[in-house]
Image (cartoon, rainbow over all chains, first blue to last red; front, side):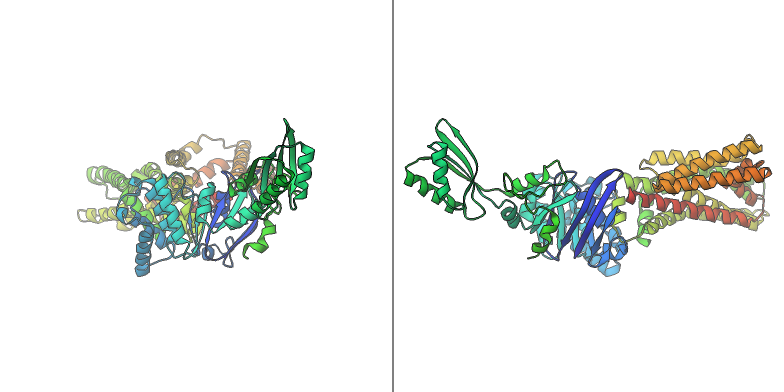
Length: 340
Length: 287
């Protein structure tokens, strides 16, 4: 549906988006996740033709946004970060204008306005001045505008920012409903939001795509290795020997203190409880008490922080799994298995 | 484009701008008609328009100031960029809406000569010729105002700049008597103008090579003229100031002369400033 390839954008000397490539398929809700300033808005602005790119191309269903902007824009509805509303107009007047500008006329225009008003639940305020509406309603009017012309892709830039918790839930609900019939791409810097709403996640940091996939898959693949923290009542040499009898484990760290030994063990990406069961058996057989044992499953939160908090935008691909597991974090590596 | 046009018209009539603009224009034309046609019993309606011309330098910027500046301030320009319409269509739609706003009070003014003709001899061809020229001059000034509005997101600034530029244009003929008529004076002034022009090109296109290229060409050309045909430069600056005056050209119509070159001048100015406005909007896309 949408192909973004090698997108680069400089603002003067500042590199905002760097060689960004990804594909977005038909249907589903896609989440653009990244901290503020990661290049989400810039990317969305380029995808919708609001901004030029320094390099690279964006094509929507085969129409290049720079070569055939009209054809490409007809396939998309866009809500920028700040909803572009004329405050002196009523939602009805506003939608009428946007619909006309999108080339709708007569009966079709009326029908689309009605369905957009219904879909976004702004029936009760349709004749009020937009300037007098609450932020939640304004956001809905902005979304209604994006729905006109029945676009196959809806792009929403941080649609929940600045809303109260109830409004946020309502907007998320709306996004989920929209995602049933078309492709929805929305950006957010809140992980939990993306996790609950999206079928696919693209994580962006420092203008680069650092990871993409389904939420569960990302969690599994990027946070794949489970870590076991273990403290036993034995000296390090003896304890290490017992640990080494258990298969599929290797020690990341071992520290002895006051006769106890604390381990950080990597349990691979298999079932962590199989490893803890085996550890329990081994130490019980040796008659050594396990004082503490804790399985730490890396969550998407960890992945997100890990990927986005790096200062170095180059994000080196690490071969060893010392403390983290950002292997294959380069965007291109995931292209193949995303659609699987 | 029709969507933009209708939207703009509705916005203008919803706000006060259209009404205030029309009221001011009609009020001043009315005062002029009272003084010339009624009190002084002159039968030429074109003198009234000559008298009112300067008021355009004040009310046109008031009309055009919000056109693009306000879109920028409210960030609604993002919507225009995202809609399947071209920047040219946006600018043309906005411009046509302003032309209609200008044409409405002028249509009422068109009745005046007819009314006066009922009470005496009014030479109608020159009257309507002058009204037509007044419309064209206004259209050119509106195009300039649209361009100035596209330069900033502060509509007050757009209006102030517009008034300043248009008043300068209005007085440029009387000022031209005070500028140097010598070859050296014209040469220096033209060099300064060339540099300013190149700075503007550099600012608008963000293309320093183009700006430098233009600077080199202009300065070389100027030096060439200065070297080979210095007499060309004598009195050139005041001549340019006279030629570029929107108002001075209008007064030929007031004098009863239908000047085709002035019509072409106005049309060229319209195309030129609308083109610049489109470029200025496009530039935002290139940041």
